[in-house]
Image 1 (cartoon, rainbow, N blue to C red):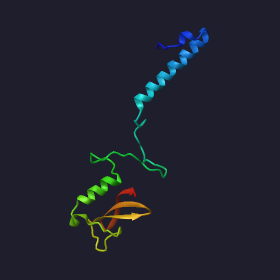
Image 2: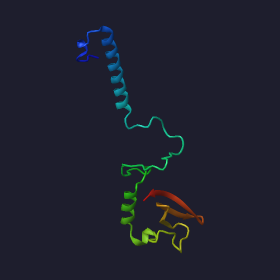
Image 3: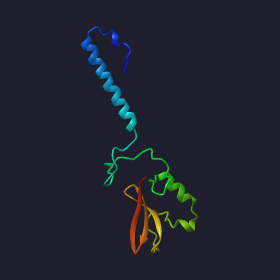
Image 4: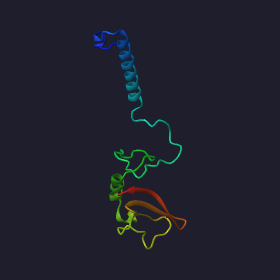
Length: 128
C-alpha cells in the first residue's frame, strides 16, 4: 500500500519497518471492520452476563427475539383487563389455575409466570 511521508524517512531499513507496521495496522483495521458487531461463534451454552446489563437491545420483531422491559410493558398495556390476568400486587393471583399468567417481582426482577400442570413456570425475566 502507498503511504504518504514514507519517502521522507532517509534510512531504507527504518522505512521498510515503518511500511510493514503500517501494512499490518491496515490489515487489522480491515479484519476489525469485517467482524465488527458479530459474535465470533454461535453460542453453545447459556449466556452469562456476570450480573451486567444487556443494553441497547433492539425491539423484538421475530418470535424468537429477546424481549426488553419496554416492549413487555407496551404489550401488557394493550391487553384488556380480562386478558391480562396480571395481579397488580405483583404476586401470584389467589385464584390462579392452570393457564393463568401473571407478572411478579422477585429481587428486583420482573418475571412472567405461567401456571401449567399445577406448577408455576417462569417464562421470562426482566431486570426492573
